[in-house]
Length: 352
Image (cartoon, rainbow, N blue to C red; front, side, top):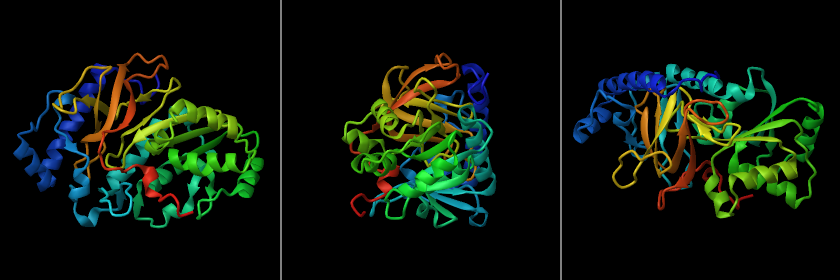
């Protein structure tokens, strides 16, 4: 079996539930705001099922500084995306949680990328990594995925123009080798694909694998779905293998990546539950509702069980034709009227 997609429902649920119950107790002891919220809502401290694990709305991290460690132990602050004037979430990581996050990301991606570092092109600009202690969602994503690559090349200049000359030189240097491409969906669409089309650029990324996520709302506004995105990137840029992923800065450890069948999968460290947006009760597989995410990693802040603003559907569990175990699901987008906070929103279009 392929770890971390190897545990079947019963075994995974039991293991994950134990860890989540431990985290609930830990955060009650260490975070007074979390303790007060659970007491006020009458939530159970010891859940008997994953569905019973108390959850916080993800929006709370925009309103409160929630952490279960002292300020001295903070080594990294992650911030969610947000346009000017919007509040952003602040996620405080200590060394232990930060190291766990890095290790887990490696395990989650290993079935797709293997253990050997690949030449890597980041379809973004290096300027998003200016501050080494405080990262936006884009910066954190780039830094995390950079561990899978070597000889990193940033394909966009600071003014978001495509570095065509540098890109072609890089592709020539690594011709015949598998290349890892990473970027945020909207950035790739707007500043790589559209640039290539408008300037008639003949770029062939060759034997490459693209990992991308975030920013689907703006593409959906242009009526571009996942299949169209993949097809056009193949036709214009020669990218042969594409995997979308779903995750959020508010919950470290929850990276759900597409399998070969195009389904987002839950690894053994994390899970999803779909809830009715009115009653908040769990819904049956096949029904759309609000996505709740669970992760065994967040120890420095109470983010192990979060109710998102995203709508999704679980399509099955342990029986995906790709061979990976766990739940597999799709994301339909944000609930209506939810505050925009996608990775694509962090770059203000039109300033180029």
